[in-house]
Length: 312
Image (tube, rainbow, N blue to C red; front, side, top):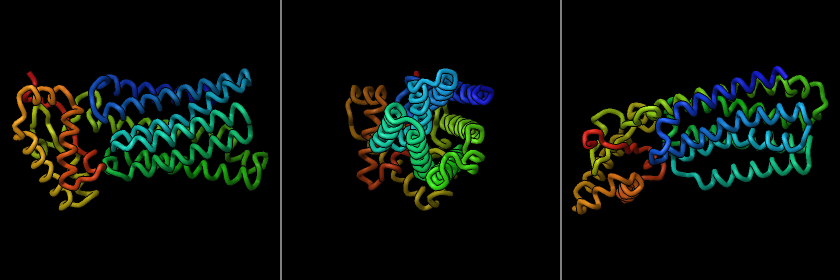
C-alpha cells in the first residue's frame, strides 16, 4: 500500500496546485477558462484514479477497478481537451476522449483483465500521442511548459507502446513484463508523468496570467478596441516558431482589423454590449481576421483581455 500513498500524495499536490492557480479566473470568459477547467478535470481524475485503485487493492471489486481505469484515462484526456480548447478545436478531441473513456470503462466492467488492461494502455498511448502532437501546434508551440508536456507525453507513449508490445509477444507473465511493467515500475513512471504534467500546466497557467490577468506581449503589441485590449502573446517566441515576416504580417493584419472594428460606426449600446461580452467581441474580431485569410490556429493565438485603461 505504500506505493499507493506515494502516488496519492503526488496526485493531490498536482491537483491542488492546478486548482490554486485556476480559482482566480473561474468565471472569466474565453478559451483560457476552458483550458483551466479541463486541467482541473485532469487533476481531479489523477486523484480519483489513485483512490479507486486503493479501494480495489483492499476490496477487489470490479466497480472500483472500472472507475479507477476510467479516471486514469480521463487524466491525459483532460489535458488534451485543455490544449484543444486554446486552439478552438474541441469537437474531434471530445469525441476521441469520450470514446476512449467509454471503451475502457466498458471493457473493465464487462470483460475484465487482462483484456481491459491492454485496452486501457492502448487508450493512454493514443491520448498521449495526440497530446504530444498538440504541443507542436499553434498557439501552444513555443509556450512555457509546452516542451515539458511534449517530453512527458512522448515518454509515456513510448512506455505504453513497450508495455503493449511485450504483453502481446511474450505475455504478461513473462519475466520481462514483470520486471519492466509490473505495479512498481508503472507506478514510478506514473508519478513522474503526473508530476511533469502538473509542472507544465502550472507554467502554462502562469504564462497565460492565471492568478492575475493574461495580457498581450508588451504595449507595442496591444490595441485598445471597445474596452478590450487585443494583441499577440510571446511575440519573440512566435518569431522563433514562425519567422519574423509571418509575425509582422499577423501584427499588421491584427492592427487593421482592430481599426475596422473600432471605426465601424456601431451605436453606443452595441459597443457597450461588446465590452460586456467577450464572446461577441471575439466573434467580430475572428470574422474580420478570417476575411484577411487567417487560419483557426492563427486566430487562436490572439489574446483579448479587458482594457484596464477603460475600466472604471
